[in-house]
Amino acid sequence: MPNKLIDQKLVRMYTFGMVLVMLLGLIRCSDPPSPMLTKAMKKELDSLYTLSLDSIKLEIDVECDKRFTSIYQQAIDSIQDLREEEILNLVN
Image (cartoon, rainbow, N blue to C red; front, side, top):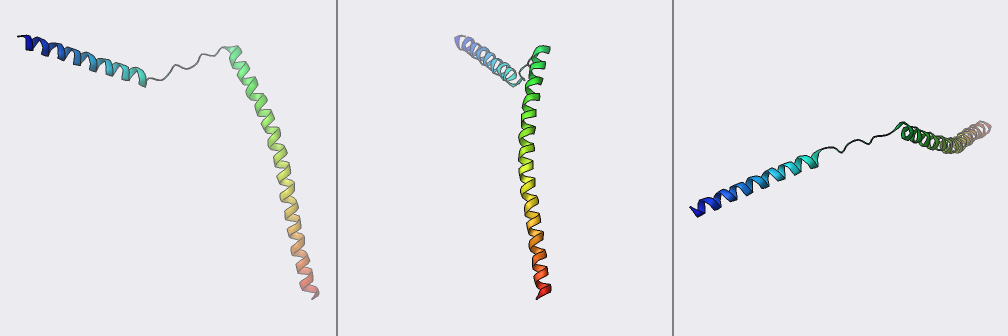
């Protein structure tokens, strides 16, 4: 009789442990709630985004102008070198 009582307690503890593990697993796998933003917070975030976007656009434009000038000058130099070579070949 005492062994049967111990076995029942072990089964209950095992069952409780398994249920607890499953519940903790379900809680852990759920997505965190999305943040709640007020209108003021959204407006502030939008302003920060717009400011950072403007500064990034300015930096990109400056870098683009530098590269364009460099590439354009290389293309002109290359065409001039080809034309000079053609002229020298015609003269000789």
